[in-house]
Length: 63
Image 1 (cartoon, helix red, strand yellow):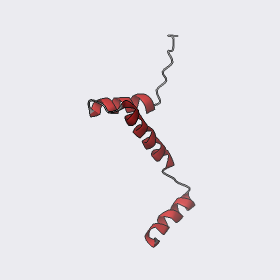
Image 2 (image 1 turned 90 degrees about the horizontal axis):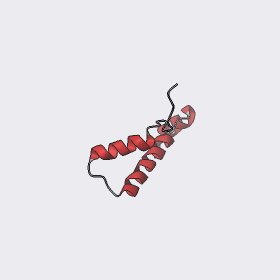
Image 3 (image 1 turned 120 degrees about the vertical axis):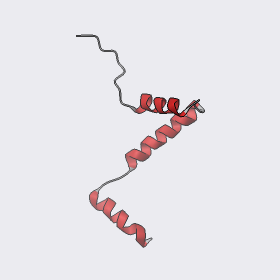
């Protein structure tokens, strides 16, 4: 337990967390479960980028 104490104290002092990374991993895991498998790793990577890449999907008319 003592070997983890410094990590815990530093996280509290610096106010850092890996919560966002864990949340994203959970969402990706859910995507994999919903899809019931992909034919290739490339298609899975494309699906991750499509769903979580943050692209604006609404059409913008040319100005």
